[in-house]
Image 1 (cartoon, one colour):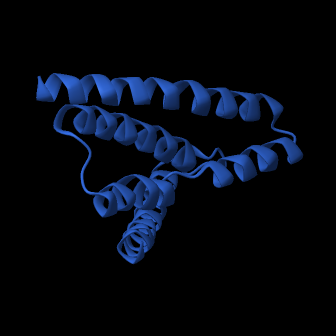
Image 2: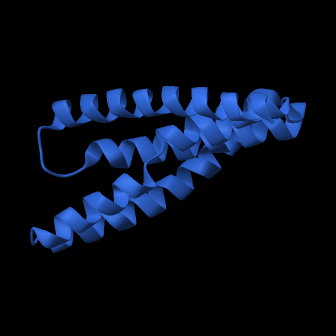
Length: 127
């Protein structure tokens, strides 16, 4: 139990730092109010979890602490659904209705596609 909690905590801290770095870098690159950073982090996180699921399915699940570190901790800290929700609300309250709709639908569609892509790529790499 303690080892799983430590794994989640460490993974979450590293995932949050990675999210901040990736999101900040992307926002600096695009220099816009549109939350490209959050969108990209969510898609990348979805791809990563799809890839891990394919790897786990082929090789078997890693030990519980490693699984907690990678999936619950790191990817939980890295992906940003609560930030996504805040970004959507901010776009709406500022009157950017079309951008908000594009952002919300793009996040949903591309993140789901990324899970499939990650799982497919993971399967191709393994088999």
